[in-house]
Length: 321
Image (tube, rainbow, N blue to C red; front, side, top):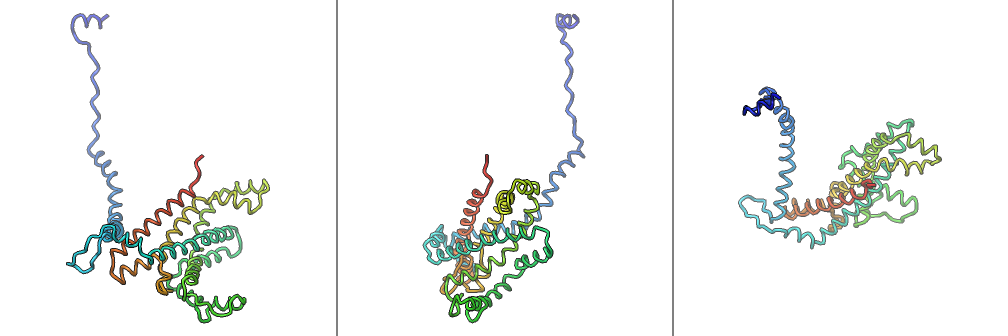
């Protein structure tokens, strides 16, 4: 009744006044802002070094690939557009180098994956001398490429090398094979080096992945009557699927980036028959000082690797149900 009387009398009813917004203390606001900025302050030095040593050279190389780049200062560099790229697509030596790089990748990647996984399976069990065998298999990975390349030069020597001696002793050949005298024997010798040196790396990655395999699944499969081979394909392979994706992608990238053993063993010869993409790029850039064409080859190689990595990712990724 009192509210009605107040309305009739024309006097406005008393409404609750809104509470004033709480003011955040200045010290707290400064502390909150400092917490947001602090991570970036720690990241800035690393990002700066990465930008100067990685990003800037990439961008500069991309720019150089569109020019007939002149090394000497003061001499203008003609702009060619995509001329260096079209030149590569019409260059028979470029295609030969691409085939050689692809051959090396196809020959070396599957054995490194298969043998690395088998070695990891064997050395994952508790056996005597397990640590020693792990070290021996991983030792080639940390050995210098130059050292092992010189070793394989001796093993594949055409004048009484170790492998020629073995093949003669088995009566498979009657005279020494000149491994580095022609294209495909040289590619086989260099691929053998890549396989031998990379098995240990795959083994270590797979050993880490095998630690995550649920032992209860293995025991359940064994109780159901699954043998060792069946358990391997039904339990172990699906469990290390993502690891296999990572290993295969890294090995494909490494296969196309083969350089040291080719350069030291054959220098791309004879007559450029064992040239791979990186040695051909290196020769164009630093032997002939054609940095524009060398940069174009580098970015074509990058495009090939990106495409192959995308295909591998789609092939190995788990199916969505």
